[in-house]
Image 1 (cartoon, rainbow, N blue to C red):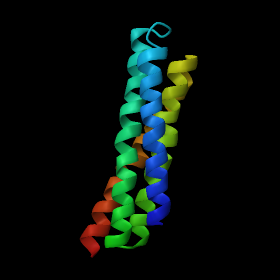
Image 2 (cartoon, rainbow, N blue to C red):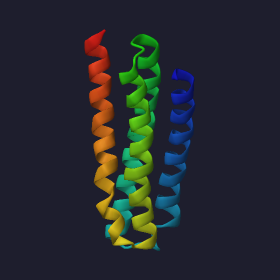
Image 3 (spheres, one colour):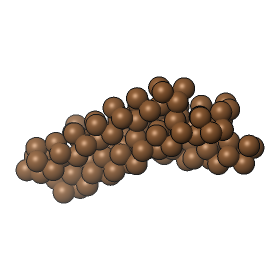
Length: 122
């Protein structure tokens, strides 16, 4: 698991940096200030949780458990749902996507709680 989460973290960080550059250089003139801000929030949380995947990979080596594995998968899920829905919302204007964004946020929160639980148990 640790190797998989490390790979996902590295690829996710790459994508977050690419998305940030795209937003800063390619979208500034195309999106409203509100939608550009939405895109930037997606990038920020995407990058934070790419780093969280490295933490999950490390935690899998330190405190191997179902909680550490769950944390990694919850971070992946959160990136896909939270950041993915915000990227899509900003680029398409489909407002209904904002309704699923909190599900990704809950996945992030649950991932952090799983890491805390894994450390507490060991």
